Length: 275
Ligand code: MG
Image 1 (tube, rainbow, N blue to C red):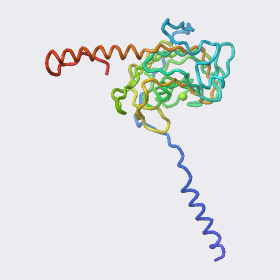
Image 2 (image 1 turned 90 degrees about the horizontal axis):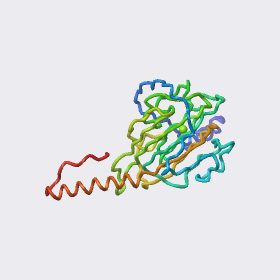
Image 3 (image 1 turned 60 degrees about the horizontal axis):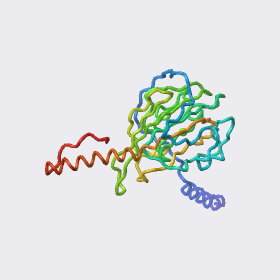
Image 4 (image 1 turned 60 degrees about the vertical axis):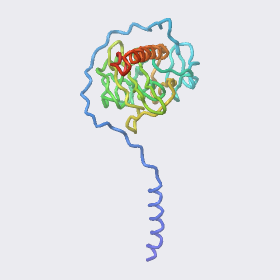
């Protein structure tokens, strides 16, 4: 009897504590059974690739002043090494061509998602995965060059750990109007010169825990480079901001469409536009 009197309040407290504990984050899985991306040996690295005249150079080996948090990363011999936190560009971008040169650590540590993990977050929320996927199996929509948790790369074009690699990311930003999605984002990626994402539709924010969903955001947003605890190196980051030209082209198409409809006094078949 005495034991019961003591045990019941303790048990009650335990039950209350368990009920109040936050649920552990659950990994989101799409349920899609992707085929394995074949391994393709890319051509040799010939970089660094010089930026075109209209590029904005975000990192050329000298400093990371273009980024919030750049001081946290180590800078050695013209190379920036991931350390401590994500870095976020001071400038914001929408449609763009982004060129990134990076290398996974030469010394292999860990496996799967724990090996050479970083990432390029377009608009601070749509991740193109950086991972050492050289003979390092992981889930396909999380391997190097994946649109994270949404689309695996078409092929695995990774170079060996420690070797320089390039990403050329061609991005069409999503468009929102009155708080609603008008057109989703699209992304094309060359990894070491090999096409690995071909006009892939972005389904929304890339997340480990949640299914992709769009949340309206401004037309331009910063770039973010991920700290995932691995000393991934970067040597060159430049970007061509293409949004004004895309918008001007779209406006020209819309103007012509309006002219044709006015002449026909009613809707006519639209000229081809990007969806
Ligand atoms: Mg990552």
